[in-house]
Length: 438
Image (cartoon, rainbow, N blue to C red; front, side, top):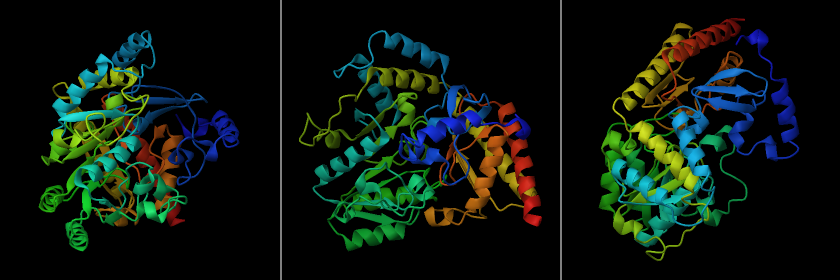
């Protein structure tokens, strides 16, 4: 697709109508393109590594429905499994055999999980695990990290990064101070700050929750020793360590970040990939902790659509596809080629940039870096990112519409997709440099 033929008239018409029907015209804020300018494209269909919008434009997709499309959109084996499941019904509100199968697969894959509870979203998983942390320890306070996003529940909307940062909101109106008064925050990758919080709040902290690899301030990996340090500190103080692997689970390794870095938390939240593109979430961990959850124990949590047979079916097939020899080596290779190429082009065209990747997850910041946390990420040139995003979109490359979001590759991305992406990036970044000189 060339910039000369790029036309989004139908998208613009549909989005204009949507703004009269839904707040901001969208069902989730970052989709509105507020931080990158212009208007969102309206999807018509997806397949493999590609998107087609309602105007007929085709794009190479590096969002992957924010992570779940790790095998590629509409994978034929996932679709076939869903078609068979649909004939049996769309919702049971009762136990199904598929729940057992997916539960066993998750328990076998994720080191920390001995028992699991399925829910409907990552937000719901994080809400539930917070209640469980407090129920198990008898303590109220938690520590989260600046720029880590754990869903939109009130108690987590404190220095939450992601869509909150994209919209320029420090937190959110409507969240009472009493709800967040027990949420303590520390800079990501700062063990000394965590130690100080424990010293100031002895016997009061139920646990620490974090994205082991941050994806909601852009892509930010842990410094050497950071995750290991958190494990030691929480054990020392009788607090729980929770990895929010809604984004990293099954993306950077089959067993998630905890398998990649060999650090075992007490509890884990999951989502996205384990539903194969359908709404799903889960939380799990040590059996003694999970036994607190109703009906086995006194901590109540429920959901009519939890364990939905369609989501379980899609999740099972997706994990089967991922659990094959060479899968993650393939993802790692293609993602490194993409990020390495982008960084080289940025350097050659005179733009400050840094970034990296793990497995199928990556990020690029328009700042010299390095980026160790949210404060570093905020130094990025957001105006430049917006122009870069628009330029890539006009050339058929769909990137996350925010500097503060990680990107994703899939098993469907091929070398020619990466080559085409890098050629577009060179054209856009060269053009931006020429405009800087004018």
